Length: 422
Image (cartoon, rainbow, N blue to C red; front, side, top):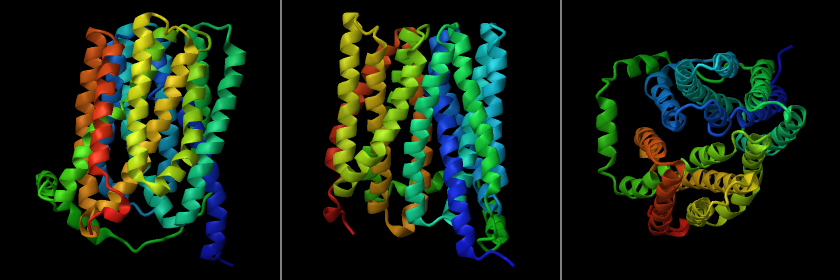
């Protein structure tokens, strides 16, 4: 007797919810934006390398988007692929830790750059497969419930585990404490990968070999001409005026974490405080921004940008006054920018769906992602250079200035839903 589609869906939802929670815990405890920069700074890697890891990760993601999106889309079954990517990310972290234990700075720098590149590459492959998997097997309402459970339960789990590991390792040296956190993260990546194998993945779409073969015949240069053609559309030009400054604002989380690592990488509670603050930020942002987003996307984006600007300005003030050596100050700052960036990200995606014409939605999204990824790579590398030549505070100052400009751009460009031109 075969299972009906409804019974299969009922079985898959708890499996996928549990897997997403395990993955959320793993990503929070092994965050490439927070935890790994702490480890990099504690190992005395040059500040340029620590800051440029953001760019390296983006390059990996961009390669997946450009060259691997079509093969991934053509793949009929995806759960094994997702399981492999979860375990592969854990393996990248383990290899980086093993090489870091040698204490040889040039070797560690190469290992971290390689690990970040591979994590970016694998993470985007996983994201493409997971988006397709959820679209095929989970209804919209269930996806929303899963998302909030992932952020809520995953955030609480990460906070609890971070506190537990802190209590066990607080007397250990910095490398040992940071390694323990990453080891727990790797364990949860493996558990997440194994848990998704429990779902039932039936055939949910017709074969797309014809589409795949058509895509292979497409000329490489057409990708660039499609992007250039989008600038002929008025809605696209207006959207990009708002979207490009947000690329810089999104870099606030890794660079706020970097300035915290610079000040507290030897502290017994520095990394724990950063993990708890970022996990709390995800926990709070989901219900908070959902309520505001229902009223106005502009309100979310303007408020979020101003939160980043004000928090950055406050952090710079106490930094130059010489009183920023309290770890709680950096934890609060990271919490605020995590909440802000999460809200901005969700609001801009929803606003895109409001303004993009149906027939231009896919091309527009692809063009925006390509432009923003390239801009992110260049800008994060530039900010890493500024942090290396001067100090991380100068990079924060640049983010503050652009955040104010982004708030003005969002206020001018993002119009209320009732006034969006049809």
